[in-house]
Image 1 (cartoon, helix red, strand yellow):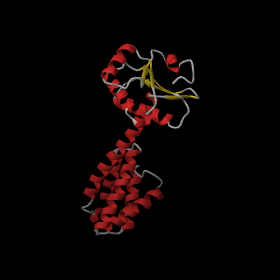
Image 2 (image 1 turned 135 degrees about the vertical axis):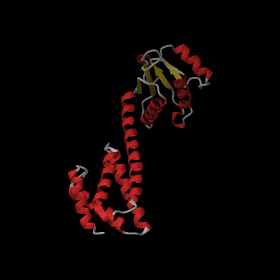
Image 3 (image 1 turned 120 degrees about the horizontal axis):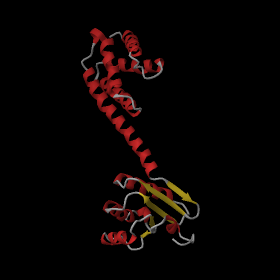
Image 4 (image 1 turned 120 degrees about the vertical axis):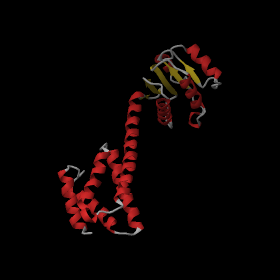
Length: 236
């Protein structure tokens, strides 16, 4: 295989199809490495080529580029190779699809994390409290993310109160109650009291928590956020 000729032909085709995905020199350097591995018949070279292609496809997926773009690059390699076409390109296509899906999934997870942060903002009131506000859904993943951020926020802080306000969320339900129970069992929560404000019916919620055997005194319920803050800083 004349790798230099194939590379120039490939780069030309990619440019015409607008699939270079970066500065020409940088792309040429990366693709040149692929062609060197493709021309090497050893198993080690083929494994390295698969690894490089997988990393490339995963990066494209993480950037939000379509799978068709990643596959399009390989399809143009078919054309660039011509009579030198390699039977291993089929495997490269399979690896590209799988790796792109993995990158796209990772991007989706990052986007979901940002959405969760907006659904559950935190505030610090110096010397008084760390408070989290649940806005909208009480889905388990939202609750778990908020509780994790609350605990992370209070580690090593002097704020005596830990507050969760649910006034912007639907009425507390069984999922929420079980999440509170799990929260009280976390080692990082040892010795702390969680004040839950914005509770629509504190008596109903207290009864539900008692049935789940939530440790008495670990969860305090309030109808209003102002009540959860309390009048005295030293009152836990």
